[in-house]
Length: 225
Image (cartoon, rainbow, N blue to C red; front, side, top):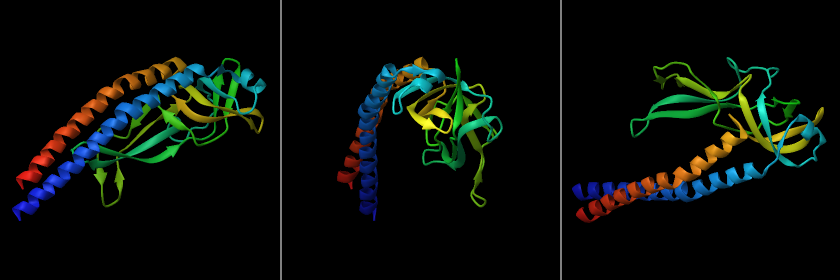
């Protein structure tokens, strides 16, 4: 029985080690490259106002930089777009386990210096939302009712917003089909992606190094058993 237990522990450690090594490679190489390419793309794309978009060609990829227009209807509290997460207790490492349980990304108006731009679609990503709210500092999860503490991250009227998308024909003239909405400016988005690209290799090395140590532990258990 002891030998079976030792082999079982070894297999668990070996799989965990491989998982961390693969994760380290993904973060360090793929994550860094993705962030770097996102920054370079944002630097290339033109920043357009409402007037530019109205005169632009359908299909043109561009950036809109402005604020959430006050005419947008609110969905919850002052949020007009948000991601909601629910607390589900502690994970295997005793860290808070949050699961996304609702996402609200409707068509919106973005105020620019010469008018409002219509975001026509409802399937865009929210990156670094500027407004956050949590129901309570005391986290709770009721497994019987399936209810836990909820937290929100999103945009409200007046929030800074940078949108990457392409020009489309809207109901009332030109609009944009958004790919993502960032809580800040174009410069802030580029800086965020550059920072992510620079720290991803370090995080990848940490994850990979931890994976190697766990792998060594698994090999030791395997031969010891």
